[in-house]
Amino acid sequence: MLYLPQEEGQGLVEYALILVLIAVVVIAILLVLGPVVGNVFSNIVFVMSNPRGAGGVWGN
Image (cartoon, rainbow, N blue to C red; front, side, top):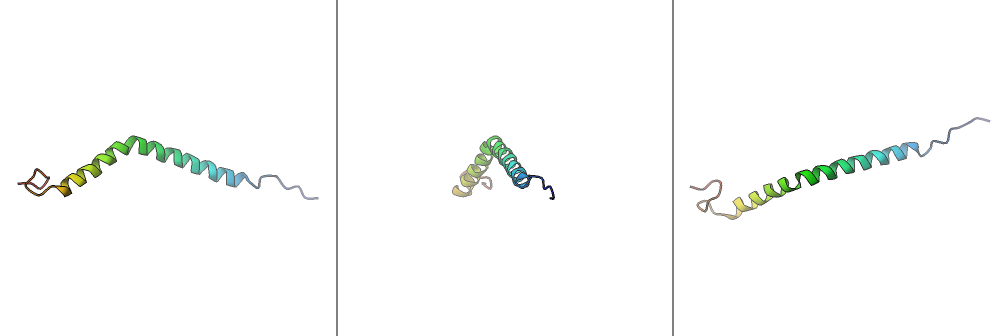
C-alpha cells in the first residue's frame, strides 16, 4: 500500500495566511494615510466649488 501524506489543506491554509497578512498591511496603511487622503479630497472639493477669483488655486 502506498503511503500518502495528509497535507491536502496545507496550500489552502498558506493562501489564507497570505491574504490575512495582506489585509492587515492594507488596513495599517489606510489607518496611517487616511487623514492625508481625506485632506486631498477636501482640497479638491474646495478648489472645484470656489470660483476663480474667490481664493482658489487659480485665483487672480
